Amino acid sequence: MADQTTPSGSSGEEEFRNPDLPGSYPGETVTRRRLFEGAVQAVGGVAVAGIALPVVGFAAAPVFSQRDEKWEAVGAPDLFDKTSYRQVVITLVDDIGEAGKTTVYVREAAPDTFPMEKDTKYIAITTRCAHLGCPVRYIEAAGNFICPCHGGVYDFQGKVIGGPPVRPLDRFQTRLRNGQVEIGPRYSVTAQLEPVRTRDPGEFTGGPGGIWNLLYPPRPSVPPAP
Amino acid sequence: MPNLIPRPLRRPGKPGTHGTSSYRPTGNGGGSGHDPAHVANGRNGEDEGQLTQLVEQGKEAGIDVVGWVDERTGTTTLLTGMLYRKVPKGTNWFYTLGSACMIAFAIQAITGVFLAMYYRPSAIEAWESIQFVTTEVFAGQFVRGMHKHGASVMVVLVFLHMARTFFFGAYKYPRELNWIIGVVLLVLTMVMSFTGYLLPFDQRSFWATVVGVNINGTGPIVGPYLSDFLRAGPEFGATTLSRFYAIHMLLVPGLLVALIGAHLHLVMKLGTTAPPWLKAERPKRLRRREVEGSREDGS
Image (cartoon, rainbow over all chains, first blue to last red; front, side):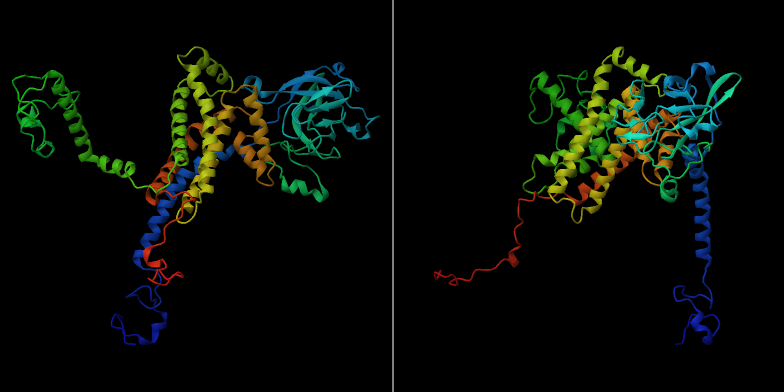
């Protein structure tokens, strides 16, 4: 197998010569041409990344950015009692007018009736239905929350007693500050009313072994549950 | 004046044109330059009457303008290739659905541009701007109505076109890629409908979007992040409307135009199919040949 193109007559190193690179030295894998091609493509890739990554970051940033916790005063403690909910309005997002506001149903905690409520003073329940987000309404006569969209029904504590909702109504953190009841960030609850980080409507919580917390992971953009 | 026209574009064999000033690069030829002393268009040497002469000169000028453009762009070749191409026997009205979709999209784009001149994509001003368009702007209600109902028309036409393609088997080899592009176009049309629905920002728009984004969030693992991405945050916020507006006005129309272009290119390149109820004739050499005297009755 005489090879006329070998620069040095090294017939013993034929097996190291790369058949795809004619005229290559034994053991050579990268030619000058390949090196330059690769380098130029790498530089081009850096240029594209320099444009594309900030653009993608721009669009995807809200998914990861954390907002400050907002606490809003809604009234003196004597406005709220244990047997019925009182509707108050809070601002979730500033500067967009009515679209940024939401109603919250607030009552005093009743540890005699519901032993798990002994650690909090006030219970604030959201009007955002856990099925798909329509506003629910508290019906005084029945002591229930009813959603007009698809017929979801929740009991006095916010647990689901009928219809398509997948978990109890979300709650808001509450505190007493300067003689005013204040409403804080939202959190979701499991079917047993244990707090978890807030989820969107339609997402299950809890489950055996916390399976639903894996399938619907907590997002970095919302504050942790109390 | 005639010497401004380069030699190849002058009509050969019409001796009248060389001597006359009948060519005008813009407008109808001969409007102001008509001189009864000049010889008319060379078909007969007599004066045919002023009106006929004007018409002839107008046509002449038009043809010359088209010739000028065509020589520099090749448009005539393209257009005759598109409009005079061969289509299979049996092509019927169903085949117009694709063009109908494209016209519907064009109407949406044009009415959308005019609406965009008045729309303000701010959560506080959006509804007001649409009220202004509907009540105060000349033909505003008409343009807005065209856009709103045109969206429904486009979705219906797209589905009918998809059904026609499916039932006629026009997705088979070599048109599979065209079908795939068509499906992507369908999805983009749905995205346009969804994002456009929020823009008037009335109660129905707002709550429909809230519910729609929440439905999106029920997908496991990725769903919540996708919802956050659409809404620009964990709840409907200050930039949600801007985001939907940017997607509706810039991102998806750009993709739609690009993919419609690819879709049309493939249709031109591959041709259309015959309807399924027409069977193709077997090529002559594959047909069974009848040998004389071989039939049962001896013929």
